[in-house]
Image 1 (tube, rainbow, N blue to C red):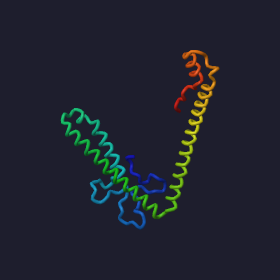
Image 2: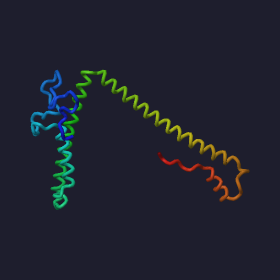
Image 3: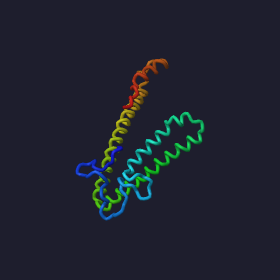
Image 4: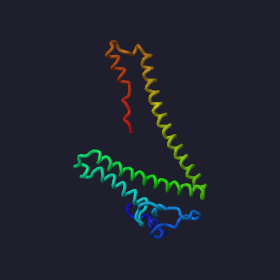
Length: 178
């Protein structure tokens, strides 16, 4: 992930891609945004990765472990996390902008994706309904077996202990979760 994304896909030259047609001057994920404090070859992805590493490093740093000032530790960690969140928001905005461009340039692609997501959701819900129906049938059978047992008092041996033993023998063991 540390390597730049340029040239990652076949047929692409290394380096930042040209801006999309019709949107001159728009900042790319692979280009530093104007006014940002990034090196010229840095990308949002690189910045996101480095800020995540800084967050993790600040949590396990020996300086913080050996430090005694809890407020200083908290402030440092908060700053690292805030930087990570800011860059994550910028990255999210970039992808939302690209998604908006795609929806304007190719609306049929967005509709295809929505239809596909809805089909997957229907399949997932159908499987869930079938799972619940199977459980329902099982418990209906258990209840039916118990009610049939209660209707046959002649078959029940005398004494409460014998009745409990017979009743517990007909109840199936609980199902193990899969």
